[in-house]
Image (cartoon, rainbow, N blue to C red; front, top):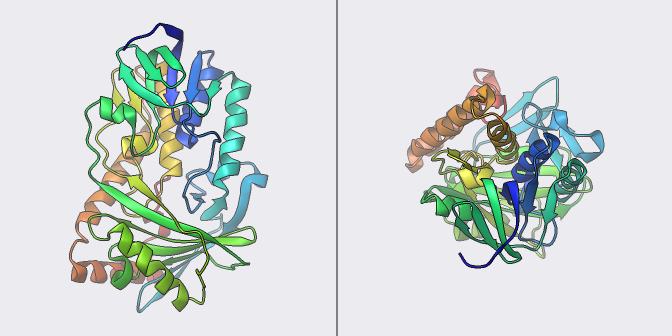
Length: 342
């Protein structure tokens, strides 16, 4: 790459999502010079249902960031309805923009150099070409999503992806709901995640069984059956990478969606992003660092991926979903089987 270095940093983190922010903040708090790049002008906004689990993240967030919390989860199949209850909130909802702004304030307070509206263009050994010039690095962290530049520089493909679509519907919704509708969403599901004064209504499925256009066509049909009118609603879509092939590559690291650490089964990605960001930071600070939480997360992510492969046939998928809801309803399994957190 041509051009002189603008400056050099101990670590450059590409992507100011929850994973990148967590990584950059942890490093800066340890006294390292960190540059955090974000291609968007604003930090935080993303197509996301905004659900965070108690075990994974919501117990660590300030109360004013929590939109709503639910000690019950309602899980539906075409023939059953399970209600799962717990003492602590199973899942809470957050506004992704507010979460991003809160984490960004922490990063800046820790001393992270933040550059928004800046695109990463090319990776070389020890330098990064960006739309604002060339910067040197000792460690490089790709927290730049499913289209990660760092992942491509490492030569890793991205073949196993899912699609999430959602919109915000005004109103006061009482319950958090999961709908396993095989006819409409194949091995995926539709959801109703209440927030303050509105709810995220959407659907998720891995691409192997449901194309994005099929989800877009089926979501309004399903919502109408639930008494929800999506006419005029702004429906947005995003890809979710669950093609995990490693996260540590010498002095280059992948975090969250860039590493493919989301659940292929549910699409959950916020907790994997933050945990992997914190783990990458700890490993940069201590090359011998070992994270049992990260190891458990990877095992669970791979378990979800294997289970997803078993759902390829329509009959096996329908039977498995009915069996799972029955197991939830009778207490044979807990809701945590779906969660990525501890």
